[in-house]
Length: 129
Image (cartoon, rainbow, N blue to C red; front, side, top):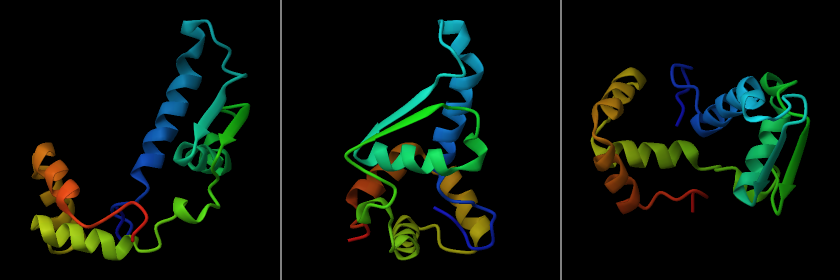
């Protein structure tokens, strides 16, 4: 989810992955690893994710190699071209219409279970179809 005013940046899953990569880089030596030899691996959708992480300048120096198995960031299914429409449908369905700040506050105030139930009962899919 993202807003066009920049208040909600979008790609939150990718931001979470970036933080995990940074954590591994900062802590791997405590587990006997070498921070200069970290390899990212992803299969299918995970391959698209590691491809995107490899391209992100903020990850420069945090990993040495990337293995993308059976997927890529260029795959048609790795990009949701209907994201704005899908998000609007979901926000309307859950009852959080309004400007970006109000929507953000509304979503944060909802119990996780309600968000999960709403997401699984909506017609919004990962591919936007």
